[in-house]
Length: 512
Ligand code: 3NM
Image 1 (cartoon, helix red, strand yellow):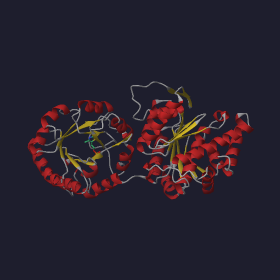
Image 2 (cartoon, helix red, strand yellow; image 1 turned 45 degrees about the horizontal axis):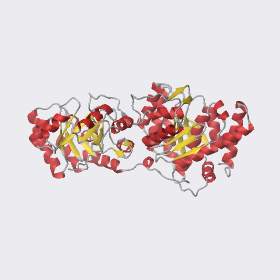
Image 3 (tube, helix red, strand yellow; image 1 turned 45 degrees about the vertical axis):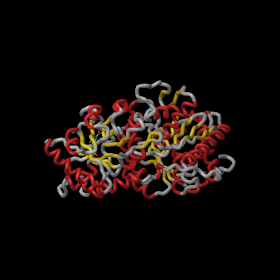
Image 4 (cartoon, helix red, strand yellow; image 1 turned 90 degrees about the vertical axis):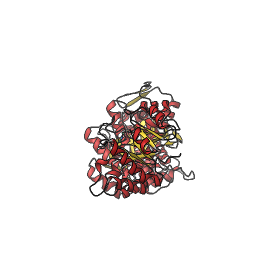
């Protein structure tokens, strides 16, 4: 039997709005796109459970929607339901399979990669419910109450075998269903569906709630579409497209580089705005077509994390580009956790960092196993020290790009630019003196954001983020190389660098 797991309703009779009934909610759901129903009753007598299961089965069976009984094998057998779902503390899956036979559907709840590995080893389950995706009020005894986010779900998916289907559960609703489906991908494997309780069961209009979820599932967001560059367009035309638009670069950046980043943004012909006032983010992102955001983790604090978080949500809502600079994210656990939170909460267009930073972000991909830390890269302050070989760096960069569905820039003597579709380019250039003044790394983020903002408002390379980023990096490094010819000490280099950024941006022919 092929089962459609795409929109999996898990019931809860304790949250029905006063204007409806339990059965009406379930009926509205199966009539409007729910593809599977799990009857989950915690405080109910066996007799009532069986009665309720029969009533629900009457609604689901004519629609060919499988009915899965939570936990109670006896009830499932009594009503000849299509399947059983068990949690980690319920009857072991191997035993359930013996009781229900080979043909019924068997699902198991998992909360971490180890539990998934166990399910794979046992080989008796048809699907797993992976959680807890986001914090939820519906189930109190979950193992990960803050939610593991798409990062955690991907780590669980990574352990799955091909023959076991998977749905994500926990805190999934209209605001995040689409993102969950598109973010929870590992290689060519995607979620088979999402499971929800309150989004439908507690809704005043369960039919509409289900239809809206259905539409969210079926819609491909703009950020998930990879666009590939038309090669006939010369690099200087991409620069001219940027300078002629004067894009706005909204910085939420660190205290050390604010002034320099603003000057770099002006030098390339864009406009900086430094705002940490969440109340105005909506106005910026909704009203200004050629705006891009820089989220720079350089000098974090608890208040700023809330500001980042708000900015990410708002810029995602309006599909505006975001450059994420995880400065020194390997310096402490807390910093990497901050990155985890942000990358769980939204999508970014570009992650830019040095080798150490990108190797730390790599730890958030499913390819990193928590217990096998080889310690190849580590951080000292914000400078990166790495003995990871180039090929390995590139490979891990590709894994970051594909995992987060974004373009990755790894800065260094050679800059690697890697697309979420695994294309990669290398850009050399720059000057050693770029490492002697503060802000040259961070302001590359500003430059990239300016190019992405211009590209999103008026595409010249067909919305190809990799290409727009590459041109930004080329322009930046060319200016650095030119400045290095003119100045041999840090102070004068800084001035020359700004001059050359302006010069190269205004006259990009032959230079970029
Ligand atoms: N299992 P809602 S979370 C039934 O993490 C259940 O395994 C979870 O409810 C898990 O969609 C959960 O209302 C409740 O957030 C999900």
